[in-house]
Image: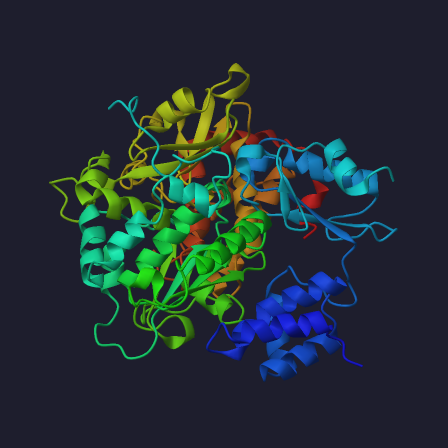
Length: 158
Length: 444
């Protein structure tokens, strides 16, 4: 059975027409797979490599460069929360916010809560310094957040 | 110089209802510049942009029109335009606001620039974190295809163009133009050795121009109002310095850190950091004083309080020992903050974001972070101060030991923090005190 979903294959196919090389579709392919499955499995890497006419090692070379992508040993939770720790956020409590969330959820940056709901990440500058400290949930920014705001937005009443 | 009568140009349409839609943009005269440019010869468009003195807004300040002339004249086959929307320099957020609020202004600039450079495929490289920007741009591009502003025979001119959005994956180095190109090609974002420069051999080994988002937003206004209008704003070139290209036009200043009103402010180039903080950001917060100010993103280094009257144009920050104007992202640090902690934050950023290709950068950024960890842990030695300075003068393109400028950006915060605040580092080490322990610092 194919590891890549019909939708993932369709997205990859659509992207092939946009670039003069198949390798350029590597990032779009990794993005769609991780979005759907929370990681990029070894089997998915092989199948992407087949479509792009590359070796799995070439895909893995790119994947492993970007800390963004997760392997099947280390999949993401349902939501991915990034807390910024770069200078403008640090000056306004970004590090304390991250420490507070680690304490409340009992995890370290990079880890996922035991119920598999939330993966907490530390981020370098998220580009929302006018609203420091800021967070990114999946790919949506929220400005001027407190630990309570974060809990409310990503954990609901849990 | 008074800026009291200045009317925003790039931010003129902020906060209008539906400012991101094509209908709203066209109601304000949008795409008239494109119609005008398409009736000109492409070389005339380049001449207008050259004459305006527009310099790239992404950090290096290279004259935009001149960059376009480096493309080979007789090239057969494609030329690519890459838009650098990987805005990741700490303190910088102007691309985000420009795209979210007024995407068509940026896109009109891209179509005009593509026409000028004879590009028929443009790639818009956008950092992954800007998901809202991605969706706004996607909708805006769809509107353009539906209205003959993209695709075949744009506005009946015979000119064809496609714009493709390409999302990054959270790596600062993709803002370096050849790192961006490698990433676009599906590889790890290792910057290329130059020459060849992208204009000769860039994306997919074809002639390529890489331009910043804010630079693109300036283009329609230059076509509409002419180079003289653009040059009426900012700081003219220094007649005694033949290498100075001047600092013309409006500029987006991002203000963050310890001010009462952080935000994005548009002003003619050349306002001082002091005026920016006091008149446009509500002053330093909590009634405190500024200790240090970053003039243009963390990689430019620090200005001390006594240097705040320096004009923030392309030449100003360099005169007080900073690397340059950078992205004009002004980060204000108050007098209750330790420069040891601030420098540690900067060094940790570069250690995290070094791509690892060049040994001096990979090792230098990591070791400077470790030395500062040691100092913050109360185990620093006075000789560590000179060790940090030695590292800072050994890494980067300026000493000639690395391929790209990331390490220069890592070096400048070290140089300027230590040279301007040396007493504070000495006092910190002698006292043997510890910064508030943050065990998370090394967790990633």
